[in-house]
Image 1 (cartoon, helix red, strand yellow):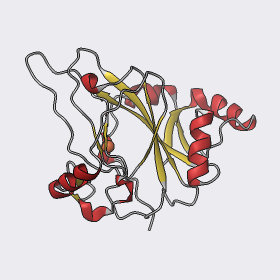
Image 2 (tube, rainbow, N blue to C red):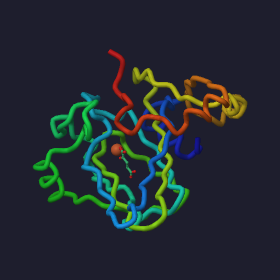
Image 3 (cartoon, protein in one colour):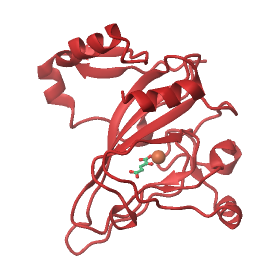
Length: 212
Ligand SMILES: O=C(O)CCC(=O)C(=O)O
Ligand SMILES: [Fe+2]
């Protein structure tokens, strides 16, 4: 709901993008005596998808992230690759991971990078871009908000699930023309929200594909 982020996503996707995903990624410090692992390089668009932009992920790190605490590895320019570069169908563990030979080939053209991103920054990434969660070698959790804006024409049936407490806030923003997004929400009670917020699906259990 950052106005600049929404201006960018609206310019790329069309007016009033659909905000249907709101979550966060925690890169945990290693367990005592252990090491923390990297994710395989993958695309979150782990299904047959359009060849033009249809979804943008808006990330906001709540702590400054750098290679030491696991800033996301990104592979610039790879949003134009199609699913033939991937292995692991949607629903598999580590779905959307990029085939080894494609990685080597791409790295010779543009190598991946792990940027330093200041706390509170806004990172806008095409859903199709190759990327990977990286090991956090510090003793502090690296936490990053993740919201996805979909093109208004994209037939995605997902809905946000929010506690009724924030209904007046979202409605107020919309009334004052400060939301700039379509936000389909399943409203739940405070009791239900408190009972379920720690028991949600992980990354690729969500289905970002279109309705048939
Ligand atoms: O936490 C990160 O840096 C990236 C996580 C990610 O890409 C995922 O879970 O799909
Ligand atoms: Fe991902």
